Figure (tube, rainbow, N blue to C red):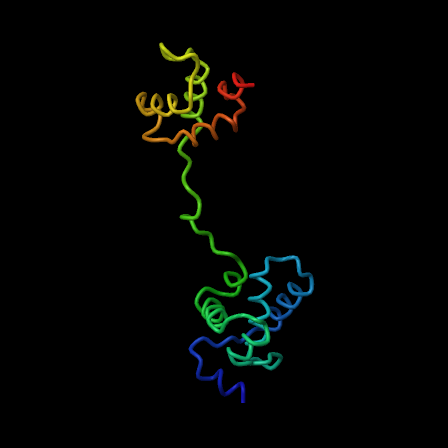
Length: 164
């Protein structure tokens, strides 16, 4: 009955003996990311080969306490991108912001913060440094928070030392 339900699916999971063995070993060790373990369990339950259970998406979702859409996406990922891609997290280049201060800009910021403060000021403030790095074209724009984090990271924050 379950095999008939899967036969009409667009993305059919049919694992080789080696793939089933890898998935079972992955689950047995349990030292992978939760997402990878869930996907491994989905693939084993969705497998229509002789050794597989060949369950429907809704049966798999109920058995593994996940959504039907997650089961469908896992099937699709296996068919479209392959076995390895299904178990590996995708890298999203948009998830991390590009660094504002590279090595050279960071060195110039540190040198500026260690230089004498502008006339009329006892010491550099983060706001003054923020304005000056833009004025000197060290970076296009930066917030005082970014300046503070950069100086703290390098342990050369004269502001923190001065407040001591």
